[in-house]
Image 1 (cartoon, rainbow, N blue to C red):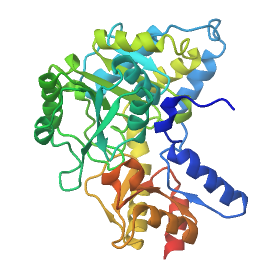
Image 2: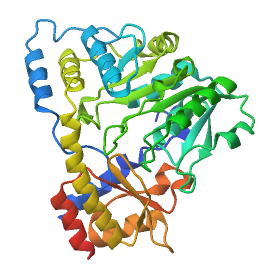
Image 3: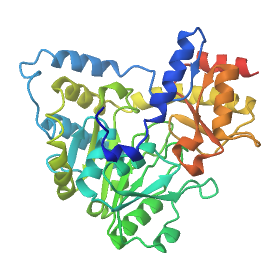
Image 4: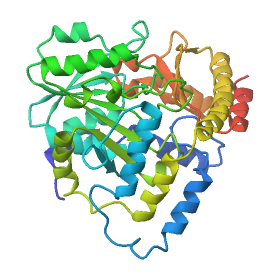
Amino acid sequence: MIAQANRLNHVKEYYFSTKLKEVRAMQESGKDIINLGIGSPDLPPPPQVITALNEALVNSAAHQYQPYKGTADFRKAIAEFYKNKYKVALDQETEILPLMGSKEGITHISMAFLNDGDEVLIPDPGYPTYTSVTNLVGAKAVYYPLNEEGNWLPDLESLARKDLSKVKLMWVNYPHMPTGASATDQVFRDLVEFGKTHNILIVNDNPYSFILNNEPKSILQTEGAKEVVLELNSLSKSFNMAGWRIGMLCGSEQNLNTVLKVKTNMDSGMFYPLQVGAAAALRLNGNWFSEQNEIYQSRKEKVLELAEALQCEPAKDQTGMFVWARVPSGTTSEAFVEFLLQKHNIFSAPGFIFGAMGEGYVRFSLCASEENIERAIKRVK
């Protein structure tokens, strides 16, 4: 048997990859599992996007290799989107890099900037991929705690008192997953200043800013941000296009060119019709988000009812496509989720998978129909 690479000794299979195997096995045995665990939109993409995709399929160049930096029109659509939605001016030639999903970007950025032994500031709780990719490239994860009392925002004054001499990169994620917390303009200004002061690349992962959020923000709105900031964004959540694997990375030409050195050795360009469909999505008017948020708001009210029935305490002022709630006292997040699955055939995400500070919480997804959420409520009641 060929031994695996040493870099995998510190990386586990993604939690949802393993847990969903168990869920599928339960379903195959005849159990009706209501899945409130993962953030995979169940709603369809905009119809205009499907039309654009289909029409692009017959383009004479549709099936050839595409530019590594994406088509000019796709980059133009991204620039228009950032200008219209975030009031951020981006040079479509030098400050935008399309990605095959923003998850790809996490790996590319880490490979582009991190050496063995470099340290990376990672939010706790936070997206587990930040840690796994950090481990894969031989860097060291350094967690900064977020808590409910601090509105799930970083305590930069406390961080500044630590030895940051080996820290090269800091992951931030606002609107935040899993807690739904939002960053203020002042928080973004403080993060930019923190990056400049300590020579740290700040990367904001920003896929949730249009879901149940009245004030979409980009950290690139902050004056001087491009010097020390990169921002990941995605069409997966906002446009129900998760399976399309389309995202983007925005920032300075110098930083994007560094990432491009990795990307050009990892793929040969994105399928042309996908880029045409993505450009059509980015050019939709604001009615799209309003219609989607009406659906998500109605679902959220039902999930909050479910949380109340389970004696969970939701955190306040949440945005995004999840409800983050404290589990009842006397139990752990893992035990609570297992109880919910085995007793009521309802799958949710335990907070501990997002870090030590997530223990004691559970995450419910809004990516389920109202009918299914109502069925979950009836099971519990």
